[in-house]
Length: 222
Image (cartoon, rainbow, N blue to C red; front, side, top):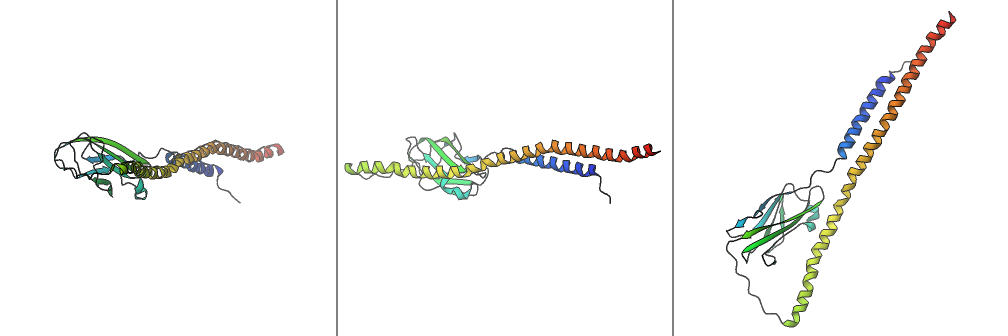
């Protein structure tokens, strides 16, 4: 009975282990950069001189639709009042919200989205509005007794989206464990390579010793 050379098998095994270790190290690299805001209309620091009916943001990748409750877009005027007139609308990589500007001056855009890699991203920027101003809606006098009740209910309505966004933002954080697991796998593979090399060298020496013994025995008998 004949056996294939041990050296060829060990060489192939070492090559396969080296490739596996390299792939594990590549998988352990930090995740690709989060999605980013690619374009905004109006742009940051822009002065708008025409009528403005909406604010539109374009991202480098499509936000994750399953975390829609963590996506937000709001525009406030110089006094800090919101000028948005509806909920944000996502369409592919764009996110827009309707606005009705009632005051000229510096406006602030605040946004939050969920990157395609599962992480929450957010940002803020300002632009100056110098276009036509919509007439503010007339206010109806409210009895003094009802004012505290209205003021007390406002914080509760504002806090609800924040808690939902915080809950959603914590869900994708588990993906941070993947690079650590891949790194541990790569380290284990790399630690096995020296052991395999030592075993291969010992097997090779043993084979040489067994091959040399018959020749020495024949010389002794003569």
